[in-house]
Image 1 (cartoon, one colour):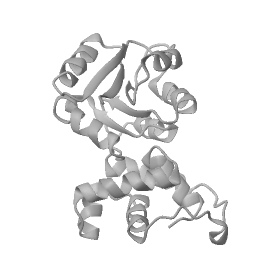
Image 2 (cartoon, rainbow, N blue to C red):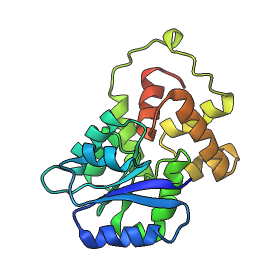
Image 3 (cartoon, rainbow, N blue to C red):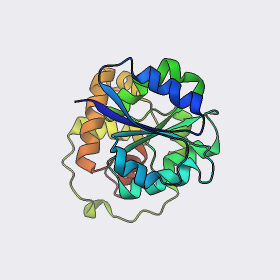
Image 4 (cartoon, rainbow, N blue to C red):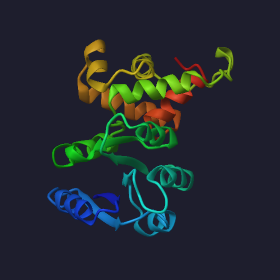
Amino acid sequence: MSLRVAIFDDNRNIRESIEMLLSTTGDIEVVGSFHDVIFCIEDIKSSRPDIVLMDIEMPGKTGIDAVKEIKKEFPHVLVMMQTVFEDDERVFDSICAGASGYILKNHINTKLIDSISELQYGGSPMSPSIARKVLSKLQQIPQAIKPEQAPDYHLTPREKEVLSCIVNGLAYKMIASQLNISYETVRSHVKKIYEKLHVASLTEAVAKAINQRIV
């Protein structure tokens, strides 16, 4: 079954380039290509994507606003932001809004397919610097649950180790090195963690881990 992808970008050339690139794979189907996000909810309803590629800079309404709306109505849909500058504060804001990762526009030709695959298997394409910003933001949230009140999500000891590494801002390759396991094994653990915690992004996983003192 093909992975369904929708594209939101006001630049027609970029949309067409992405469509052409994704058409070279046999397991990704572009189900929608949109030049603005004014009617993003209706667009998502009609195209039914698994993953959305969202430009941060959009006319009329920003990609960040669109992410908030999409995640509220369709929490299962994964959103990856497209941006020009990695350390742009809007990247951080979009992750906090519910995006599962981002890709630099000048890396689309070389990294887009791998980034989509990473999302599909439970990962979050994100640099450690942005992950640390998100972590710092989340750590400012008051602790609402005492350890003895934390729900049991039935994480295995290894899954808790991986989650702890994520909370500490480690990238997948760093987690693999620290725990002496393969990169693919890390991705498999992260997918299971997402399923057990009922979350759809790295940000949600870290927020729940911190607020409920899971690790």
